[in-house]
Figure 1: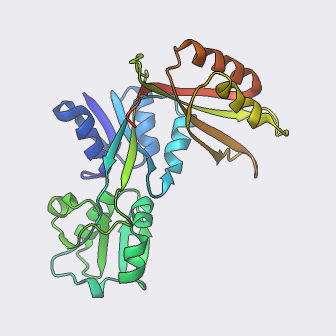
Figure 2 (figure 1 turned 90 degrees about the vertical axis):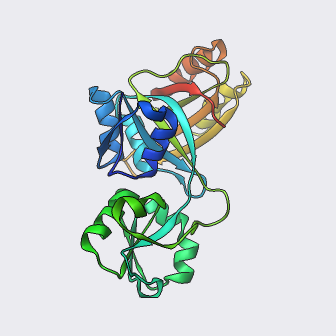
Figure 3 (figure 1 turned 120 degrees about the vertical axis):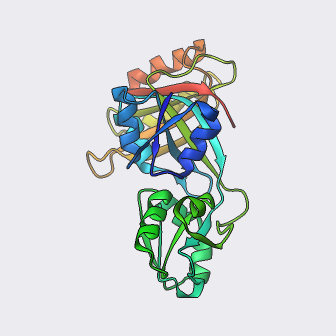
Length: 273
């Protein structure tokens, strides 16, 4: 089974893919989250694993955009514990580090450590933690370091300068498994949707949310993201309990569809938390 993930080798997405598919996954690496979703839509891979939300830093914007505009479905959610380390080339010293490379989410999740221990270091955003490790391993510059999973040290010939550098205790990231079809009903499901209101008028969001409240459908997440069509124009993402084939969910979605200019059911899938 071909599974697309954000590459190169060693990303947290690969850890999520291995956890979900065990030894059945033939991993294919892509440079961006959007590329993963597009590969699924084209049938180039059977499934794709993308990060969508972290406990510490919230949603991943590129993932939400891909879910909205690429023709894919959410088939499953995977929750992975995240542990960050600071990695450098052999012989690197913490006090000599002047640049730290990583994915923006990883840098944000370690901001307290970086602020305290490397206050003058330049933070450089990369497309993935593994891409950052690959870059540092090629350049072999002692002043450069990487924030990412400890396993990257062995993969890219780096050394661990500090372990467990993320802020706070528990640090989880939610990944989504994308496919061309979502999942069948299990009795303990979650559904994700995105919608765009036809007009910005008082009470429209209240009316839409009321369709779920009146049917006692529990919302587990709601957030907005710029539509990128005009300043102040937003898309709304909602996760709620239940499957799209459930009678009351079907009713709610029909009603919501009549109140929106665009409604996309991203998928129904087994609830993991």
